Amino acid sequence: MMRYIALLFVFFFLSFAPAQRPPGGLKLALLKYNGGGDWYAVVDALQNFAKFCNDNLGTNFDTEYATVDVGSPDIFNHPFLFMTGHGNIVLSDADAENLRTYLMGGGFLFVDDDYGMEPYFKVAAKKLFPDRELVELPFEHPIYRQKYEFKKGLPKIHEHDGKPPRGYGIFHEGRLVLFFGVESNISDGWESREVHRTPEELRQQSLRMGANIVQFAFKQ
Figure 1 (cartoon, one colour):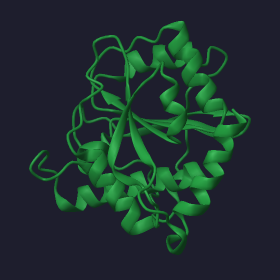
Figure 2 (figure 1 turned 180 degrees about the vertical axis):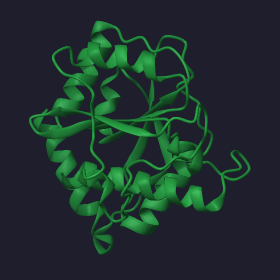
Figure 3 (figure 1 turned 90 degrees about the vertical axis):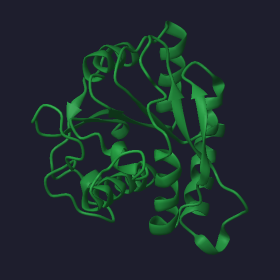
Figure 4 (figure 1 turned 45 degrees about the horizontal axis):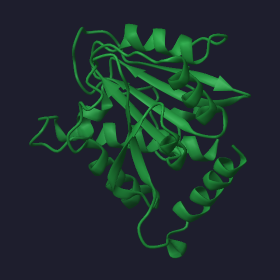
């Protein structure tokens, strides 16, 4: 765990100091899970998002992402995990323990409901942290006020049921370790226009909100 915390500090100082960037960079990681849900429901979203962060935050992400199994020690090589999908999620006891250890040790997980994921993820979150609740973050939370300001919280990128977007979190020792976006689907806006015909204004909002999440995750 301490080795991983040290890795986060190295990542932070190198990523936000462009003159000191080494060749290559750390990869964002797409989280693979069991249960039948389509964990792979992105095309080039993470590549585009990594490039946006590099161009606008001064990070040093590799623009090719990694795919990591939720139960694998490989997750400890990536300080920022991304999870999405439409359907069921099943975490074994070992999966939950591995991900919990990662989060408590300094890692961060962003979960973007691609529509239909919410009820299944809430069950998974309870297994992950049985003694904690997903709490809705107020619009005043600093995750919405990093480089970009979102006075009304998560932007609405893809319309499904006409419900307002909501952002939820789980905290460990005062640190936000997991952020869950519902009825927003911001990763749709990270995809290339050929994949999702998201209007450019919304596409920029989605990328900026994602950048806020990354910036907050490493500065909190």
